[in-house]
Length: 203
Image (tube, rainbow, N blue to C red):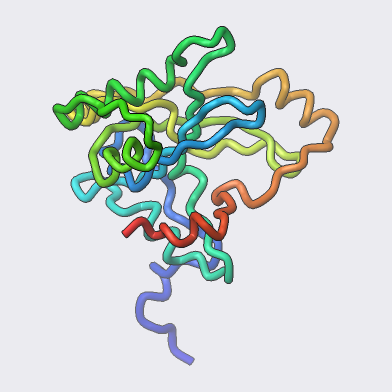
């Protein structure tokens, strides 16, 4: 058999394009209110790289290429943000997301009690993100994927510097030493519930 067209450029199963370090233009696909493991309020922000980004539709392309029966939205296209810090005040990460959202869209967040109404105002709106290397532990091994480190205003993406590499925390070092880490899923994907699956791919 002769080599088929596009053989050298074709990817293998499980092989994905790497995220480029630094700033990226994002589009918010979905925001939902959840509870963290301690029962505290948190939001889950699902996003993709916008059409004007250097890697447009990055996570949607990964989602479409996922051939498993139960599709999973890429983990690195999701940000989990606690609303309050350990002292019960607004967390820095939450304030950063809200401020960058407002600045990116020249708008003011509508603070309403209804979760659905509050979350819907973010859908398909723009924001920026700074991506850097984050060391973590998966299945007893140290991995170092490129992930969202923090949100930025969309107009400042071009001037966003590459975040400093985040090394293993003391807790992760202890997990690595004990070799008893239990994580579900894969480093690149998170499980999606049946109710969430209805919303994917966020159309």
